[in-house]
Amino acid sequence: MYTNGYIFRYAAIMVIIAAAVLSTAAMLLKPYQEKNVAIEKMGGILASAKIDGIETENTIEMFNKYVVEEMVVDQDGNVVESFKDGAKETAKAFNLNMKTELYKRSKGENYELPIYIIEKDGVKTYVFPLRGTGLWGPIWGNMALADDFKTVRGVTFDHKGETPGLGAEITTEAFKAQFEGKTIFDDKGKFTSIKVVKGGVRTLAADQQIHGVDAISGGTITSHGVDDMLKNVLESYLPYIKKEK
Image (cartoon, rainbow, N blue to C red; front, top):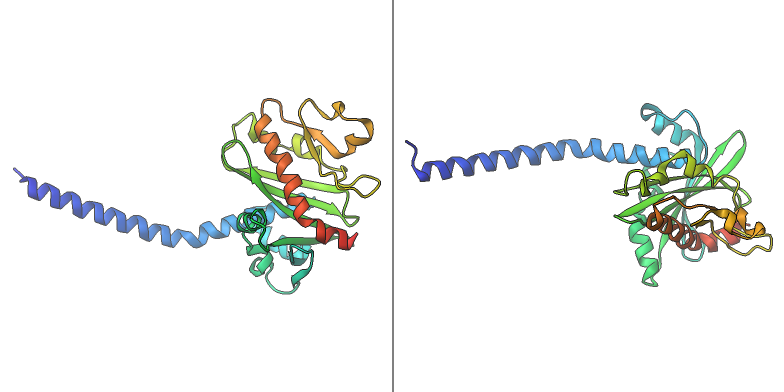
């Protein structure tokens, strides 16, 4: 019969071995996990600009083909870094932490944000990354604007833990398709953002419907989160946009 001391020593040794195995596995898998995260991020940027044919195997190649410039802009709209040549995933813009930079903005501190310029068939699209908060955690995405810096070409959204069938519907094509052709400025040049409207855009005045989309039925808090994200983050980019318009 094994003594209590033997059992405790055996258990301790097994715990140490298991911890070592798990730690080693995590270290070995980390580069692959980081690559997958980067590929997913690239895919979202390209998809918002309506680049077709994106597959996991060719995402990096497509990203480097269609992204002609990555910029970092400061809170005053000044371009502090422009990256055009080389592997685009190594640029400062691609590796900026949106959560950290937007937190700085909320505290009134200097901040920097990324912008991606995508060119296809001679037409440029400007992609602005987004980040906000949903019901159960962070939500994020991208908004692609035409070179008038007003008209939405496309969007992508994702989330960490929104409710399936409710808030998680922000990832569906039906929700995202509503944004195409909408505008973030009115005819007088006033910033309007894109409102996510409970009850539907039909409740807005006729001249305001171009600045709104239908909220998700049953996903009120997530819809508010998207609405706030769009307004807050796009406002952060206004200094740059106004310089370019």
